Length: 335
Ligand code: UT7
Image (cartoon, rainbow, N blue to C red):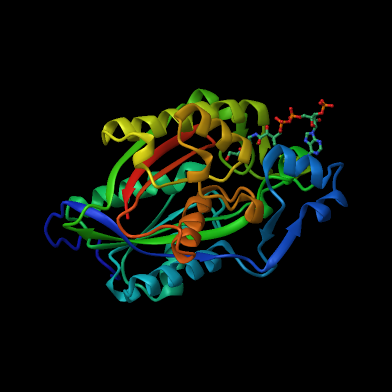
């Protein structure tokens, strides 16, 4: 048997992020490129979303390749060899294959010897994964967890649907979580509302609609979205989850240094800023470069903010996201 599901090691008060990394495909798809594919314009996309370009995974590469790249970078930043990992959690809705879990392929690619599994909470995947990872570390089950958010949405997008194809991109972000006596993850709040499942989904490819020639012909395997519906819920629920995190930690908006929120649409984040009284200047923004990379968006932004010196030791970060489900949540992190 490889690995061990329960390594033990005593309970810890906290978990902390020990290192961050990312995997970004080299291929850039600009709004001008999209003008040639669908009836849209750079001006419309920038005004309505804030997105200027996104990355597309090269043919022949897979979700686990990108995830492993991000994981390797995070391990290097944490100064931890893969052999010391107790678990790998991969948050994704675009795995290499439906079975087995993408995380076991990542385990192989990293040469790790540990538990490995996937979690699917769409764009809220990283927040859900952070909550689970934090709980496992504080419970003493594990000492080190590699948490990865990764998506290859370019292979789930209908490139003839201008309603969705302008929004999404590919990428991976990762963090190494470690058990610690020092405060790191201060709180996580998770929510879901399955009544809204129809607003954002991939109808085909599961048990309800297995792949058939007819399901492929009727484009059931692509992302379907009611943009306006998602937008309204995203502003309302990301704001509420953020306020819950502040209230739980008895913090006011001026005590937060950075908001690292899901990069879905700049206008969504403007709405959240208004509702929470967290100024937009505190929101770390990279949506213009990558578009919406779903569960990868927060860890990619975290990695960039750490590496460019924006996030400094001792600062307080608020993380928040909403995605298909709807599933959403927030986390308060002491860096
Ligand atoms: O992680 C969660 C994932 N999903 C999201 O975050 C999506 C959230 N929703 C959104 O970001 C926005 O709703 C969109 C960016 C998708 C759309 O923006 P909107 O301001 O809600 O536009 P709309 O759907 O109300 O469309 C406004 C107009 C329409 O034309 P008419 O009816 O006013 O003549 C659309 O047909 O813009 C048109 N339109 C476009 N025009 C150029 C819709 N999509 C496009 C497009 N290019 N790509």
